[in-house]
Length: 171
Figure 1 (cartoon, helix red, strand yellow):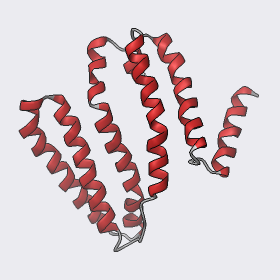
Figure 2 (spheres, one colour):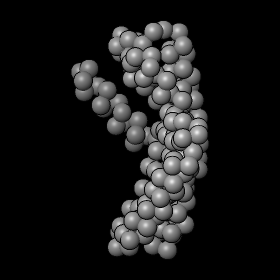
Figure 3 (cartoon, one colour):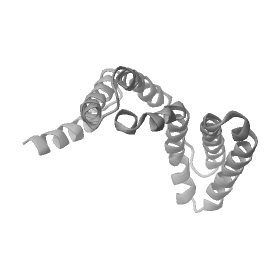
Figure 4 (cartoon, rainbow, N blue to C red):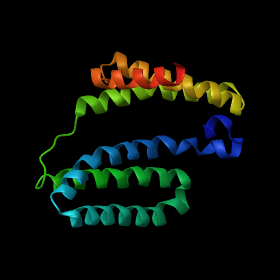
């Protein structure tokens, strides 16, 4: 929303969004392992993983940001999330055997591409405004969900839940 309604100086922040967004996706995926670690009462593993990833982030930012600027901070944030995800993936398996749902991750990433294109084109074509944001937000949501549905990324139970929540405000 800020990219579409914000000041042009603020809009420059788009350069770090892909890095941080992908990192957050990995963080969310890693929560599967964190849940297993918690259920296994081995929460020290989560703390150790987090400290290691955070230490990498701080040190790499101290080294890289003065030379390469805020984009380096976005990239180091992604690398930190990759480290956290991999540590969680490997170290949680002693407590909970789990696999990365590769198909779901790929479908989600693929469904994000048309949304990213819409946001990029909207940002290029028009000056930021709240009106633009109010048009793009529901359009982007519909585009993302529609693409995800076409790619088989929304199962029957999820479709039922979405339909019920769309009907409720409209009905």
